[in-house]
Structure formats: C-alpha cells, structure tokens
Amino acid sequence: MLKEARTVEDARRALGAELAAYRRAAGFSQVRLASLVDYSRSTIANVETGRQHVPRAFWQSADAACDARGALIRARDELEAMMRRDLGEVARRTETRLLDVAARAGTSADPPVVHPAAIWTPGDGDGWQDVIAAAASLARGHAERAAVTNIGPGTIEQLTAEVARLSRAYVSAPPLPLFAAMGQELDRIHSVLTDKAYPAQARDLNFLAGVLCGLMANACLDLGREEAADELAQAAWTYARIVDHNPLMGWARGTQALAAIWDQRYLDAARRAEEGLIHVPGGMGAARVHAIRARALAALGDLAQARAAIRAAESARADPGHDELHDRIAGEFSFDDAKLRYYESLSLLDSENPAQAEQAAAAATKLYQAVPARARSYGCEALARVQLARAQLINHRLDDAVEALTSVLALDPQRRISSLNQHLEACRDLLNAHAHRSSAAARELDQELAAFSAASTARALPGRH
Image (cartoon, rainbow, N blue to C red; front, side, top):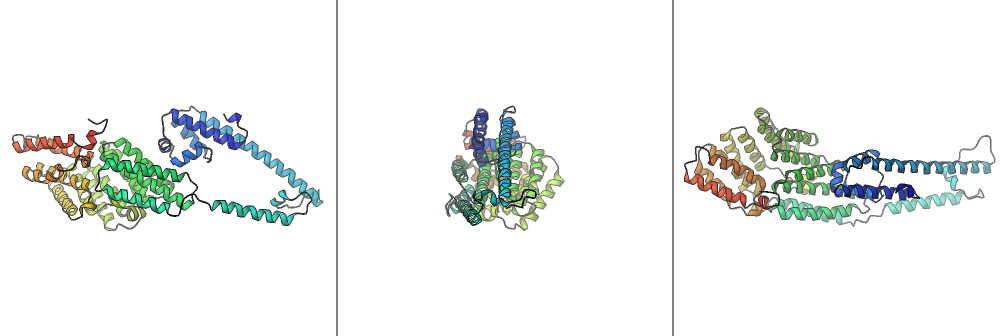
C-alpha cells in the first residue's frame, strides 16, 4: 500500500490503515493494543488515521503484539525512507535557492550569510519588507490555529465532577451497574481525547481516563474477574505514566497486587506493591500499598515483615498529605483508619493470630458504624465482619460469629462481592471442622452461607460456577 502512496501524508495514512487491519485480525480493540504496547488509546487512534508519528520501538511492539511477522516494521521503514528522500529534495531546492540569492547579491567567491527568510524573497531582489510582513503573518496564523481547541471551557470540569461522583458512589452502590456507567464515561473521555486540546486539557483527560480504569479494575475484583482487573489496572498505570501522576501509578500497582492476591500469586503481589511504593513513598496512597503488601507477606508466611508493613501503613496514614487523587476524587480512593484496621485483621488471620485479628476486625467494624451509611464502604465493612466471625470461630465462639454475620447475610445480592464469597468459604471450612461438626447451629449457619454465595452477582455472571 505504501508504494502506491504519492505523498508522505498518504503513506502515513496507509501505514496507519495497515496497523488497524493487523490489530483487527488479532482480535484487539484499540484499548487492548494500547495496553500491550504501553501507549494510550488516543495514540493508537491517531497513528491508525495517520495523524501522529511514533518511534520505531512502537512499531516493533505493535508488530509483535499483532503477530505481523515484521510487516509493520518494514512498512514503517519504507515510510521513513520516503520521508528522507523528500527531505533531501527540499534540501537540494533550498541550496539552489540560496545560491540564486547569493548570485543576485553579486558575490560568487564568498557567498554572503543569508537569512533563511531570503529563500522566499521575491524574484526582483527587492522584497525584504514583504518577506518580513509575510513571516509575521505566517507566525500569527500558526499561533491562532494552535490556540483553537474543540473542548469547551466547562467540559473538563463536568468530566471531573462525574468521575468524582462515580468514585464516591462506589463505596455504597453495587459494582455491576457502576461498571457499566464507568465504561460509558471512559468512552466519552476517549472521544474528547481525539479532539484538539491544550496540553493542560490533555493532561486532565488522561488523568481522568486513568482514574476510571482504576475504578473499573476495582469493580472487576468485586465481580471476581481478576485477569480483567489486572489489565484495567495496567491501563490506569499507563495513563498515569503519560501525565507523570505518581499517586495514580502507585494506586494502580496496588490494585494489580490485589488482583494477584485474589489469584493466590502472593510473591507477585508483594513485588507489585513494592513497585507501587516507588511512586508513593508517603501519604494515604502509601498507607494502602503498605497494607496490601502486608497481606501478601502474611500469606507467604513472612510474619515479621507483614507486621513491619502494617506499622509502615500506620505511619503513612498518620501523615496523609495532599494530592489530586485523594483530594479531588476520593471516594473509593480514600484509605481511612477503618480500612487499615480491616487490612490488619486479614494479615493477622493469615499470620494465625486470631486474638489480635479479632481486635483489629472489631475496631474496623466500630469505625465503619460511626460513618454515615452513604459514605460507608459496605464491602469493606462486610469483609471486616467476616474476619471478625472467622476469628471468633477459631476461638470457638459460634454465637458471636452468628451475630457478626447477621448484617452480612442481609446484603442485597448485587452487593455480594466476590471477595466476600472467598472469605465466607473460610468460615464454612471452620464450621465443618471437628470443633463445630456436631452443632445444629453451625450446620444452619453453613447452609445460610452457601445460599448467600450462590445468590451473589459474581456467581451469577457468565463464566462463574
């Protein structure tokens, strides 16, 4: 296709069309290919329409991802060769014009130093005023075109307000309907990103796209889709890297660590958390990542390091600092003392310390109860109650465990997130252990827990049994 192109612009569009064809043949969306080559979706869209030049490394990554077997790299190299030929022709024409200007100046042995604007000097040799005026007009025209943006003054504010609303709604609303709403908002931001924007506007749009990908990753975890959660968290990290937003990069790595924990890849989880801490060495974001790392370390049996990670989370939480993610967006991005105590209870249970785990879980539930229902994370509160019940069952206090689980069992099916099912299975294992096997109350609670998990949204989705 490139050989038929008459101009560099035609060749660039042909190369973009070739990329789009290979992408579709591989079954990838623009978003998916963007995550594989570590670029933004808007870059993929711009390259496919011939509007953006990207380095050879991009084409190498795209060629490998789409299994193009070198075709994309060869096409890119053909385009670069065409560009070099065109530039050479321009250089030759420029040199000829300069020699003509020098000849009109009357010196042949030592050509004068000629201002580049003289290339466009009128043929009679007397047009400097016209050349200067034309250059000024040209510069003004370029500046006026650069000052044009298709994004209205209130668009960024509206999008930011909507993303913040979705993040704040997440703590109290079911994940599946919110996931759909987030997807629609992300499509809207992608559409706006294809318009001409000021650098500051593009920065805000990429940040908001990253925030939405992070929220959608969290929703995928709640719906039991760990692989999709990891991909969306990687997309969030990529958007964050584009705008050099450290809190969002740290948050994304923390979410990838959570996805690895759900998948029982605890060493991967610890490593992801450590990567996250490079970007958020302190503040609320660091407290979250330290707490996630503590969970991974406890699951690996490294109890001393898990305790140290919880202490590091407490220190970071004591000095939360300020950043755009936690101040402007907040909601699901908040990491309060209640959530820290809940994470601590998980780590302590994995460390086989049920007495201290019970204290931490009880503290978490008390803190959650002090928060208005609208702003309270129903998922984390329910999980804290499950950890409390687990610790009580280990300590042979069945009646207390039944009481702790009462409000959990009353949750609407749409709010029965996947991690609840996982931790309730641990409770069921305890109920079926020797200590409670002969108890009618234990058998009744076990049946209630089984029915609860079977009716959850995560289990009802296709692909889950």
